[in-house]
Amino acid sequence: MSLAQTPPIFDGHNDLLLRLLRGAVSASDVVGGLSSGHIDLPRARSGGFGGGFFAVFVPSPSKSGDDMDAMAQPQYDLPLPEMIPHAEALETTWKGVEAFEALAEAGAITPCTTAAEIEVALTGPKMAAVLHLEGAEAIGPDLSELHELHARGLRSLGPVWSRPTIFGNGVPFRFPSTPDVGDGLSEAGKRLVKECNDLKIMIDLSHLNEKGVDDVAALTDAPLVATHSNAYAVTPHARNLTDRQLAMIAESDGMVGVNFASAFLRPDGRMDPSCSLDVVLRHFDHLIEKLGEDRVGFGSDFDGATVPEGITDIAGLPNLRAAMTAHGFDAALMEKLCSGNWLRVLRKTWGA
Image 1 (cartoon, one colour):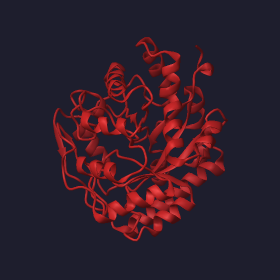
Image 2 (cartoon, helix red, strand yellow):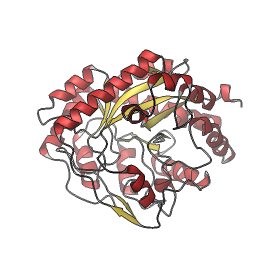
Image 3 (tube, one colour):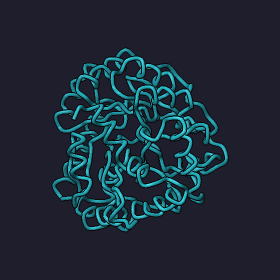
Image 4 (cartoon, helix red, strand yellow):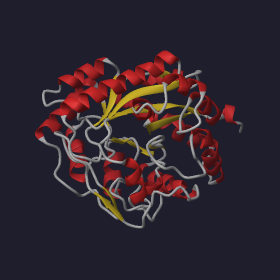
């Protein structure tokens, strides 16, 4: 099957907007093509990348390069960053939304707020894009900013990144580690879940600690979704999902997007790209075994992590497709994994 005949990939998470915020690239660069990073429009077309969730993220004032170096070691334990002040987070978040809108104006993305819009845009000349908030520091306890962001197109939200917010607690970058760290959702966090349900904003479990996941499961009326997380049974890292959590996700008819960050793929937990695509397939296999074929997809973490050298960037996605096909994933399953499962769960969550 040629690339043109394969289903386009809809992806659970990328951090391209952070690169725009940091001034590393411009919206016109994304349209014309980049010499660095993981995502641009020409490589999306060549790699069969149809689009995905574009994350607005407020970075911590730490040296991410140092963190990546530490995570390449056999064991590591990075302290959770401190909370980000609300005013600072709000300013950065609005700049992230403006970067998203700049990508649309430049012709790089088609903003989508319904599954029907995604389905149409996936095969178009631009990348289908859903605005996502990774860590809800920009939202205050009265949740007024949630409504403002929703009006600008926000349709997916993670209450935390791997640091505390007024809503809950994240998991550490530590190996080996367990997600059973810290308390569950605060009262404000519980109100946030209810308000997201009312607004039809998808709640993302990725980065949330175990007690927080349990609280979301007890409160939400929507499917449980982790946009970019892997199987703890394969890689015992707090960022991955235990079999108990996977059972909860399956019961809710939710789904998980497989994260390409090598530290969450490799059984040794190292952020090292020198690993074969077999490690990606091991996570797909385990998640499909526990969740079923209808509840697994892609959640790359492109532009936010070190990915296996067999993938490298979105232009390398055909390499992964070929490995999946050689592994025995037939055309019907590939259709589900590439985009069908995301469209299903988004229709169920958003109602359109």
